[in-house]
Structure formats: structure tokens, C-alpha cells
Image 1 (cartoon, helix red, strand yellow):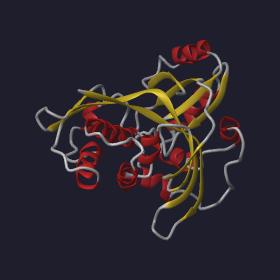
Image 2 (cartoon, helix red, strand yellow):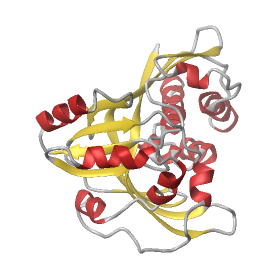
Image 3 (cartoon, helix red, strand yellow):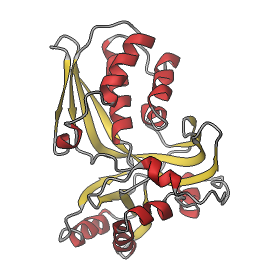
Length: 274
């Protein structure tokens, strides 16, 4: 049995620069990862198929062909022709929530298959599979802090980030990524600054916050609640939403913030930058 972590992805800053002729958007984003997330378990000798378990398994129960299966199929087509495996996805992250759950699962599947079949983790064919699977998959495959450009797939690793305590909060609404991008106002507000990545993130923004808030106004309430917590260093929405995050200097402040939100029905995850 091979086990691979699929940690949640955060966009510490996300600047939308332009709409491209191919329908995608030109982005600049600072990717970071936290210590917790989903898990992929792969048994190359087990009965072929995908089992989905965990608290958010029901959110994927109707999918006949999710990103995990697509990653397995693409690996066999483009990297190494191998038989199908028994795969378990332990789904701990909410679905369609802006923290790269599906992308992280696909990346973890590619890494697990590479380990099982003697393929180097940095094999160019593996990276190409990630690019074909989705804009965030290459970053999740890398699994390190990075500045993403293009659709987010052109990566430049940054300096390491401090392992700050983090609190992730999702209000229980799924937000459509295409719908959020469709509401972007097409104003280029400039690039992400240079220098130390956390400082650059704090000086930056998420250009998808306003359209996401228009679609799901509860995001306003989440960000307001996070912003008023003691010791919060940065509170922002990740990706196209609706998950928001807060970074703290002191773990005790993160614990207190989680306690303050315990009376809500929002999903909360106490973790830290990895």
C-alpha cells in the first residue's frame, strides 16, 4: 500500500491580469500549502477501482470520472502503461471550495503511481500530465511555495514560508469557478510584488474575491469574522472561493479563533503552513 498526502492549497494572493483569447485568464498567484488535507491510498495489486471515504465523500458520490481516475488513466497513457490499481481517496476537504482539493488529489495520485512504478517525481512526463489535468495540478504536484503565472501552471519556486498557524473556514457553499471568473471586471490592477513571499502576499489581493462575494455573500461574513480575530496576520479568500483562511503568529490565537467560530455551522480546519 502506498499512501500520498494531498494537502490543501492556498492562494495567498491571486492577481488576474487579463482574459486570454483561449478563454482562460492570465494570472499571477502565490501558492502555499498547509499540513492537512485529503489522502490517496494506492494498492497496485488490489482489485481495480476507486473507493471514496471520509467526511466529504458524499460530495463526489455522483461523479463517474473524477480527477483521480483521470490522473490514473493519463499516467498509463503518457508515462507508463501499467494496469489499473485499487485506489482509496480519503476526502477530508470540502468539494469545489477554492483550496485545490481535486487538483491535490490528482497530483497525489500521480505521485503514488510514480512511486509504485519507479518513475522519478520530477519526470517531465509527470509534469505534462499535471498540466493536462488542470491549472492547479502542477502546483499541487510540486507541493512547495511557488509563484504561478499563465493559468497558474508556469511555476517559479519561492523562498520557504514560515510555518504560521492557519485556520481555514468554508461556509458550506460551493462556488462555480467559471461563474466567478465570468464576473471579473477585467481591470488589471497590477502584478504581485517582488521580495519575500509572505510580505508580497500581504501587499497583494485576491481579484476573485469581489465576484465570489457577489455570488455567495456569506463570504463577506466569513472574512469579517476572521478579520476581527486576535493576532490575525492575514485574512483572505483562497482561489475562487468559498474557503477563506487566516494566518496567525501564535497558535493560541488560532485556537481561540476556531473556538469563536464553533457556534457557526461553518467547516473549520486548524492547521499550519507547510
